[in-house]
Length: 183
Length: 183
Image (cartoon, helix red, strand yellow):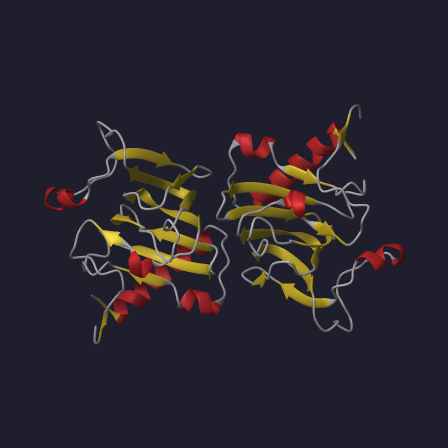
């Protein structure tokens, strides 16, 4: 749960990061940046700032902003409506992204997680994305990612996005952001 | 038909335009930028410089570079393999793009075409895209576009791309670039 003041501050911060990278948004887009705290109310640790450019019944494109060391928690995109589920390509634009997918565990991973948070992160194969690097994630496979110390911008190209269907390893997670009245 | 020298020069020019806009490519991507002259051998007039980020059997993402006043000729994306054909979203990143789609003809269009070239351009409904603007083109509908005086960068988000199936109003057009030996 976030307050409207927190949402507005995160929107301004994300819009500024995109502007600094030369990515132009319309005023409407700036005002509608999705601020996801995943219901965990720890936006600096677990969060994602999302601009959805387009999401048709065939394809989707988003810009993802991650604040420094911000983490998108582990999840997968399950099959729906006769499709295998969302397939997505992450392309790093600025900063560094530590992406974790299913596979052999990386011995010394670069992402940092508090001891108490470790259990909800099971995919441990690390892929480091620098600007210009990209990686495609098959449908219905576990993944999570964390920005490096300078944050990151990631372009996401994918099949149709149905965020409401995502399955999270941490069962406390609520994908839809709840905004609480007051400051 | 282009010479390898012309292809290499266009690649360097397109890579520089992308770099100036803060869009990072890998060295491999820079060396593989597609230079399309549509078989018309008039690259400054009719051409497109393309970086294909990803093209799976579900979605596709490209970066399109247009030199000043360069035109991508009129075409449509027909149905294939039981799909309705390619649906695509153009998002302008830098410069200005004059996009023409089916519909009421715009009385005073901004694109410039030589008198001899007019016949192969029938879609006359103009949409002006400035940075941050985007437009989605339904499958199997005619469209063409020209950059303004400063050129343009356009991000293309779409369903699967099958450039080899595109249907061009100018029947002389060959989509695959032919590179001639020598300079």
